Length: 296
Image (cartoon, rainbow, N blue to C red; front, side, top):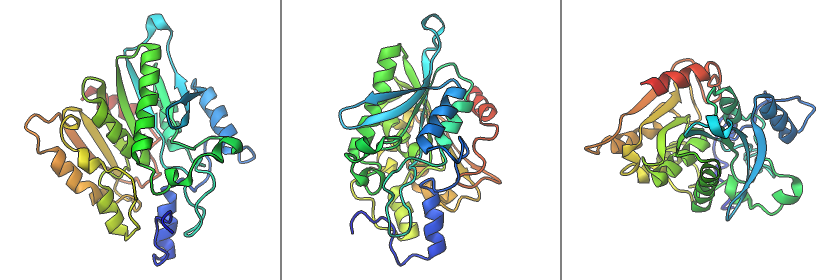
């Protein structure tokens, strides 16, 4: 079927590895006896991030936000975009609910010491069953990086920035969230984006699909195709785990080559981090790493 991204001919261990991209591992943000939604809510509130739902033209996106008082509000908002979530139950069974069971994007947002932070879930994540029933599975499968997804995320960021008076955003995306963040940054441009960080993200979708011999992500957009102005004018840091078997460090080579071709490109760096894979150990010392990045 067209919604099946992974070919059944792939070795079972490879399927397991690719499913990790969808967040099918243990839940570190809450009790095993609570639902992922309840666990995420409790974890976020404990870290000063308060729940809200942002309605866009296509999706209602779950989010958590920390904001300072108006008189002390920072002009820049740190925006974190979650990974793909729990997209698959097995090599042939898509998940009925893409809510992540290991919300690494949320953990990164929670440990950010900035006074004004927004966490955005991906479309269809953290929805009650009644609302989830109206969300097409293609939006966490083949169309996870579609025009509708990018536009909805762009609208959500814009809504919060206008409502709370932020002038610019610093975008951070984990895994598939970094793919979305890059596409969003290319549309906002350097006037509205102070920087972009991706972590273990696919920035050249065709290369990733070809590497693993997957069925193409029909309807999805690729950051490779926007690796030009205005994206070139935004300062960027792209982190990859040296031991990442889900998104191998060399998979985005064409993206970085094209990004560097502009005559007036802003500094863009690619960091391959030792002893890290796709999920480990990005949340450890994240606040210090982020501060180091911002000082450069």
